[in-house]
Image (tube, rainbow over all chains, first blue to last red; front, side, top):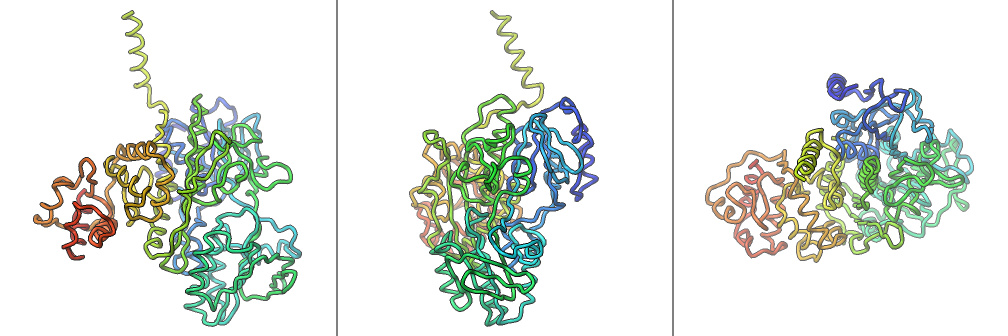
Length: 424
Length: 185
C-alpha cells in the first residue's frame, strides 16, 4: 500500500486501533520494496522504538504489533490505585503513531522463523529485515503452594496496568474502615524497584484519609526497602506510622484462594484486600521467540545495540532484558524509552551498512509519597569499551535530598512529556 | 579532470534529489534523545514546570548545564543528571537543542507586556524575548516555569547580578512578566 493511501486510510480509521495493510502479511521477502523494521510490543519500549525508527529514517517501513486494543501506562497507575487519577488518565490509543505512517497491527505474535526472517501471529506471517521486541514481564508462581490458576486470578498483582489496576482500586474503595490490606513485594530482578513502595505510600495515604483504623501490612523479602529506602522511611515515619506495618525478610510459603489467605512459614494472614506482586521474568513473547536461554528468566542482549545474543537480527528492549548483559539500568519506563531509541538507531544503522553508535541511556524515577510530594532517583549510563559493559556514572545517579511538592509537580510533567515522546 | 569533477558533482546533487537518505546522527543528537523523557521530543516540553529547551540558545543551555553540574544553579534532578556528561558532551547537547525548532507553550494566556517592564528586560532578552548570546529566549516559555524562575531570582536562590531587578518586584509583577512573555509566540 502506498504511503499516501495509507495515511488516507488512517484518517478514516481515526480512533480505530487496528489498521493493517494486506501487504503487511505479504508472502515473499521481495514483496516490500523499502527495508522494514517490525516492532512487537506497544508499551514504553516498543512505541518509542517504532516512533524513533520512523523519525530517524522516514523511508523505513515501520510496523508495530500489539495484542491489546489500547495502551495503559503502568507508570502513574499507582496514582489511580491511590485515588489521585482515573483509568482514563492513563489509557491511550495508537492513533498518534498511525498518523506518522507507522502501521499499527493488532495481533498476538506466537512464533518466529529467524532464518527466513518472519514472525507469525494469529492473523498471519509478518516479514522483517530487523525485529525489535519489547515483551515486558511475566510472573513466576513456582515455590508457593496453592498458586494455581484460580489464585493467580484472585490475588491481584496490578503490575501490568489494565483491568487489575481498576480492580485493586475498587477493592480498596469497597473495604470497610478498620480493614487490613496486604501487599507482597517481589524478590529478584523486578519491574520498577520503587514501584511497590510508591503504591504502599499512596494506599496508606488513601486509608489514612478515607478508611480510619485500617492497616497496610507489607511483606518484603528484602532486608530493607529495595529503592530510595531512606526517603520512603522518612515519609512513612512522618505520615503513616500507625498505618504501615513493614516486615522484612519475609518469604511466602503458600496462598489459599478459597480462604483468601497468604502464609509465610511463620504466620497466616487473612487480609481484606491483597496485592500480591509475584517474582518476575521476561514476558511470554521473549520465551516464544527463543530469546531466553533454557532455565533462565531474562533475555541476554548486546549492551551497545541491544541485539539478542541468541537470535540474529532481533533486538530486545525494556524490562525483559537480562541486567547481567544490558547493564545496571533498573527496569523502568524511562529506561525502556531510552533503550527503544538506542535499538531503533542501531537497527537502522545496521540496515544501512553503518556502524551503530554508542548507547546513550538515562533514568529518572519519581515516586509520590502522598498526593502532593514526591521523591526521585536519577541515573546516567554509558558504555565502557574497556569492560565491554554498560556502566553507571555514579555522580549522576543519586536520590533526591528529600521529598517536595515541586518534585511532585515535576513527576506530573514527566508523565506528560514521556507520553508525548512515545504516543504522538 | 574536469569531467570527473563534474561527474562527482552530478552524483552528489543526484543523491540530494533522490529523496532524503538516512543521515548519520551527531553525538549531540544521540546524547540528547534521553532528555526527551522529561523535556519532550527534541526539547519541546509539553509540561508546565519542566522548561522548553528545544530551540533555546546554545550559550544559555550550556551555561545552565555547567551550572547544574557544579551545583551553582538551583535544580532538582538536573543537579545529578548534568554530572553524567563531560564538558564536550554538554556543548554537543546544547548545540543540538539550539538547532531544534522552538515550540511555544500551549497554555499561555494572552497578556500584554507593560512597556515599562519590557524596557527593563529587552536589553538582554531582546525586543521580542527571543534572547541573544548567553541570555535565554523567554518568549513562549511555559508561564509556570517562568514564574518559578523569576521567584528563584527574587528570593536569591538563583544568583545573577543582571536579574537583581526582580528583588524589588512583588509576586504580582513577576506573574505579569511570566504570563506576558509566555504569550509571545
